[in-house]
Image 1: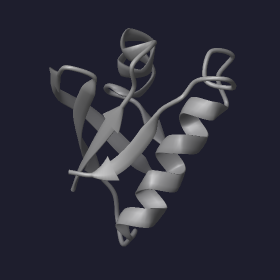
Image 2 (image 1 turned 90 degrees about the horizontal axis):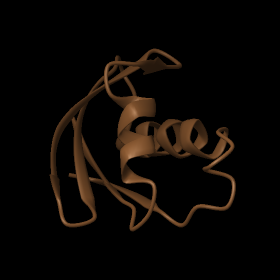
Image 3 (image 1 turned 45 degrees about the vertical axis):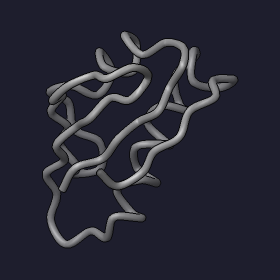
Length: 76
């Protein structure tokens, strides 16, 4: 499954947080960045795309920089 994170700010921090890491059994691998869109390949077992989006949002929001950051996560 692929996801796209749209983040005008802190893209490098988000990439550093997710790339090569796992959260709740969901592993993230960075693919590419185009403009403010970052594409990740996500590996997980038996999770819906909404579950993956929720896990991704929580991982970002649980950081110091993510608390007030504007971003979106969509299937990609």
